[in-house]
Length: 389
Image (cartoon, rainbow, N blue to C red; front, side, top):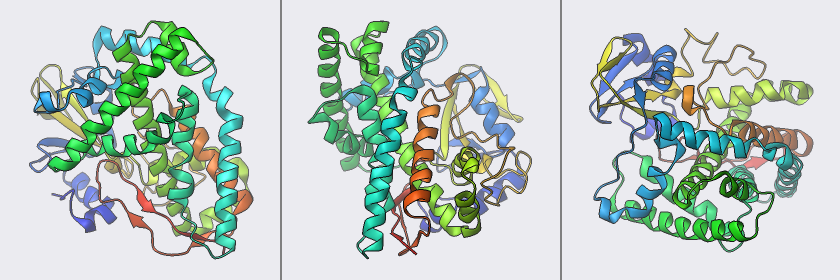
């Protein structure tokens, strides 16, 4: 069984996942405290099974994590049944009012400017880190624009997101847990103030639409937190992991450079090949089973999305990186009733970065070995140094 803190496993978890898949679709994992589904079919069942849901359990001691628990207790992701249906309908209604189309010119212009600056640094021999200069900047700016977050909160969004999501890692130490609560409290205060402002002075942003749609104050803050953390962290890591895959497979980058029409399938392959989210948990709402593994009511089971993404039963040549892959049922945006509402915006951001790299840094090469984050659930890079080639 794999150790989620082992540096060798974190560097490349996919061989360990292949061993588990060969042994069976679901396995107990004492270290994680939950069984893990490793086949694509079993992971899909975890995500889609109506007998499994997201039942939020407060971080303990609850008195010390009031803001963190508030964000999650009121999140669309952590609700089931009628409560989920009502909130998802309100959020989807607001999100579908043309926000992705409204933001597309700004997303593409920002990606182009960030990559152009990165390319200038690379050509001049200056440090050119794709993660720090592009991947970590673009999605948080897009979320800030989507929500119309003003300063000083806008500048704090990235650090809030980075700090809060560390709570999802197993066996987090007390100082980092305390930091996540402080970041959550600051985020709650800022978004409550923004919601109050939009009630008085609505605009064409998503917060105004959510306020008009009838979300209460806590639901609005929880929704904004979900958009920030899912939209920021997943996109940062999708860009970093994906561009590294292109650099490790230069023939595929040359293929994508030569044929921009491959960009949509390339985006999906980047999300599949090295997924930014490796694990997603559900809780049994009733006694059920997944692939023959019993899951009693009230117990948890996890889908190992990285293992599902390399299952030969679901993908042809799963360990090959293919930017033209057309049969690609990856689970990077989830599945079932909790499928990611922000998927079109995330796809747009990744595509905009690829298009900008094609335009400004077509000969990109690794300038040094990238540094990987020491985290398992959220899989990504701390740095990805590029040269102009």
